[in-house]
Every structure is written in C-alpha cells, then in structure tokens.
Amino acid sequence: MDWTAPRPGRAGQAAAPGGEGLRERKKRLLRQQLSDTATELFLERGFDAVRVAEVAAACGVSEKTVFNYFPTKESLILDRLEATVAALRAGLARPGVAPVEAAVAILDGELEAMTSWLAGQPDPARAAAAVQRFGALIRATPSLRAHQSDMMDQFAAVAAGILAARAGMRAQDPEPQIAAAGLLGLWRVQALSLSRCLDGTRTPDQVRAAVAADVRRAAALLETGLRALPDRAARPRSAAAGQDRGQAGEDEGGRGDAAVQPEQARGE
Image: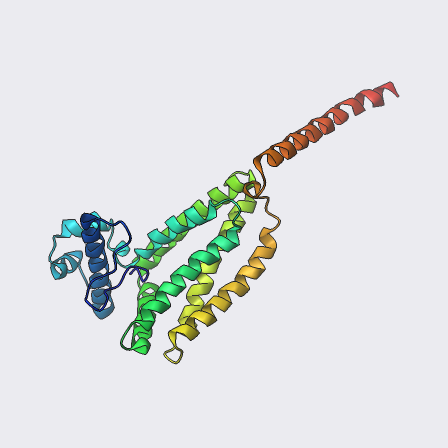
C-alpha cells in the first residue's frame, strides 16, 4: 500500500499532480484503487486466502488488468517500495548532497506522508491500528517477507553502485557495500520506531516527532563513519582530476623508487 499516494479530498476526488493529463490521472487512480482494495482484502482474510481475481472483480476490472499494473501479487501490497527505490536513486545521485542527508530526506517525506494520512482519518487511533496490522501481515507472510527482502537487495545494489561512482570505486568494493547497508538500515530504524510509536496513545504529530528523532540519532552515528568514504561528486571536477593526477604521479614515483633500489643494492 502506498501511504504517499494522493488521497480523496472532501469531494471524493484525489488531488492530481501538476500537469497530469486525464489518461495519466485515470491510470493513477485505478492503480491506487487496486492497491487499496487488495490491502483491505488481505488484512481482512489473509494474504494467501485472497486471489488476484477477487481483487480484480472488486474493482470491476480483469485479472489481466491487475497484472498490467502490478507484476506480482506481492507488489499489490508492497508497491511503495518501488517508489522508494526510485527516490533513493535520484537522491543519492545529487552532487553536493551527502548520502545520509539524501536518505534522511526521503525518510522524512515518507514519514510525513504516513502521519498526514493518519491525521486525515476520522479515527487516527483506529487508523494507526490498521497500519500495525499491515506490518504484522507482512511479517506473518513468507512470500511477502521474501518480496520485501528482494526489494531491499535492489535498494542495496542501487545505493552501492551510486556510492561507488561518487567515491571512484567499484560497487563490489567493501566500502560502498557497507555504506549502502548502513543507509538501508535507516529504513529499518524508521519501521521499528513506527511500530513502537503507533500505539494509539500518541497524536500523528507526536508520532512524527518521535520517529524522526530516532532516525536522526541513527543517522548521526552513521554519518560519522561515512565521512571516511571519498566523495568525488562533492569536489570540483578540475580539483578532483588534479588530485588524481598527483596521486598517479606519486604511485609511479613510488614504483620507480622501488625499481631503483635493487640496482642500488647490487651497486653497493
């Protein structure tokens, strides 16, 4: 379920993104309807007990149409992960923005969307309980856990690739690998904090403040370690190139000295 998607307003119409055409709007609304309907059915009866054909029938479309929007049954309920991957790819690629800063900005947006949705519900406490059931459903369903794990692997691959490019390394190198794993850990921190704070006793604003504070505590610790990772994207291109040439010269000079030393030893 995508908590960040536009929700119906007072007139029952979702707010459309700027510049959105009629066809795009219809597709967006149908996609949201399919995901919301599937989530409601899964929460009511269990993921394995609901067939995709039933979701299609409840929305008045064919099963083929459902799969045109969602490649798998699991993606019907975990569709937000795809948007997060896209946001992570764009955020980490921005020059001059530290990786931790980019990740925290994405998490802030997701948290704001979640708590704004809660605040807009007639009974926020009941809505918070529904979010808790949503998390419990994922944890209790092996196929959903596997799908979530696959998406996290994609997160890691995307993050490691971009961080490696920024540092002038290979994605397989240990530094970008551990840096990517650390960044993705922030999502786990936010999820665990939400699970703890959505207890029905806090207002949406209180939930947002508490969860954001937890994420920032984790981010501060992570940022300390990531300062050791080189970031060519943060330096002017000419300066980076000059430093690289200087380093290459030092390397060659070092190799030259090493080559001369045996000759000197033999001369002695």
